[in-house]
Image 1 (cartoon, rainbow, N blue to C red):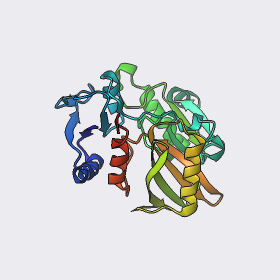
Image 2: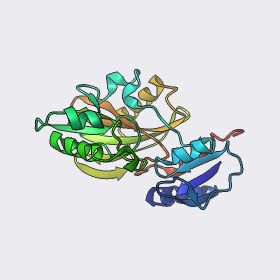
Image 3: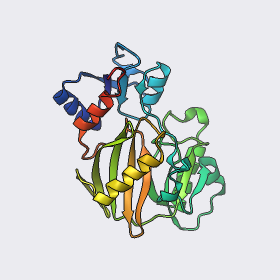
Image 4: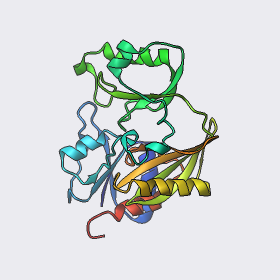
Length: 262
């Protein structure tokens, strides 16, 4: 597999694992607003290329026919198999940025807000209705051609759900239908990275993977514990998700094994 890495913190951790495994890789910058790579990589086999860095790398991979390239995923909230287990499935509202700016009433309530697509325009977070409306109106004040790629747009669909108190959060990396590595990344309000996962949480994650076997060849699934039990929090593109305390050698080896002939 040819590994193409965008130069910043998380891919640097992956580079260390690739070095230990003896797998070659190259470093590149993404040209702002254009999406080209600098330097332009010399592609040996377009069917054996994987890119790690920002989510927008999918455009580069798709334009050049690189596979697996970036493992794109469908919006997890639309996956029927998972809907009964979603933390944010109950009471969710789905509104475009325009609908928020022009029609959402400021009740003073707080919401967990994130894009429906795993497009990384904004990170999922809790915000007041007023803050969400202000954000949407700032986007709407721009003409469509003024908005850079990778930013919220007038028609970006947002999901708003009532916030829930979460006790623990884990990130689980899935490749070829198997959990490769997992870690704890949040305990209450405290961010803490540890290479561990509760036994019942791992079993829950394995169940989620089995329930939706065709979701993606590789992806990240975040699960959490609340006072009401375990839930699926969200999924993320494996190429752009934070590594936290993942075993990156296991992850790199699993992705390397996806190469044709392996």
